[in-house]
Image (cartoon, rainbow, N blue to C red; front, side):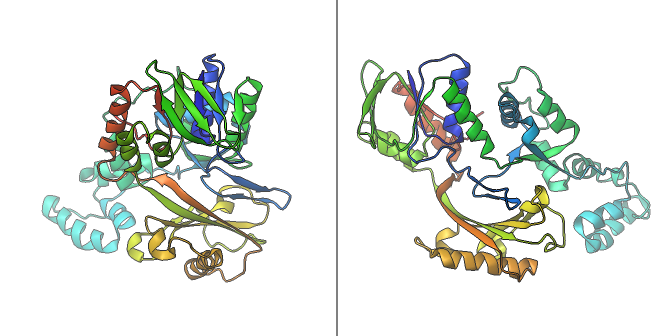
Length: 410
């Protein structure tokens, strides 16, 4: 009987795929009083808007995204998908001057490219095709929507055979995503629609699920079984396999007694805190541009990571809804270890006012501080994850790790 630890999207998905393979019985334990983990959608549809208190989008490119799209289709959520498409206006050709000015600025075009074209072919950069000298840049931009993004993606994926996904063939929603060039997707009533539908499926397929149940220790036996010691109901059960969707530092506490070296490796993975501030304004005319939002370069030394324009991506019925993301790697520097919620809200509103020139007070606000929510793939992360996997294999532990910390290994 496999036991799944963690009722976030990782644990729910693991239980779902086990169930689809007709493995039974399955037990799932979640520490908190709700399923979904960091995915939390606060629905105010009676007032025309939604607050996404954590993640809000799914990517549509690559094998992992293909699996997510199939999951959405299998859960019969296709009609709830809200696609976010990139600009599909493409050019067959363009002068190298116009392309350079558009992508890199007039000075680069005028003082670098124009003299270079004079020297190379004694021509006028305003008449010479961009394909003459910068074909790769131009094609990267047209295919991926940006020069640098295109070059990076081509470098990462252009000459590689993609890894296998769980798909036997492209499903309908994946075909739509390719044909319409979706960048990402949202869900009509919030991303939490997915974990909620997973919970419904698991309950309907005899998966035993418990809330308010935290694993405090795992005891491994020589016959390859193990005991799971739970808080809450203070119970203990024996199983033949654990699928852990817990953050690595949480799992470390569970295995430390018997496997301190493994616990040390698990704790070596760093996590960051993020404050998410949702702002709702009862008007739709506050933003001058129609965009997904913006990110702030760390060099700007502002206390926010970026702002998402939720009401530009989804129908918010006449409201302007923004989400301000703050902290991350710099959370302690800007806000300390125990920040005052009122201060965080004031920072969010002041940054919105300063950058977007919105002085109106929001009608409704929501603050969520997501403690240790995102593992950091810092230098050496690949080797740390590989060391964790090797330890589990070498000791033949009946333990499988899933979730965000397990970066893909070649």
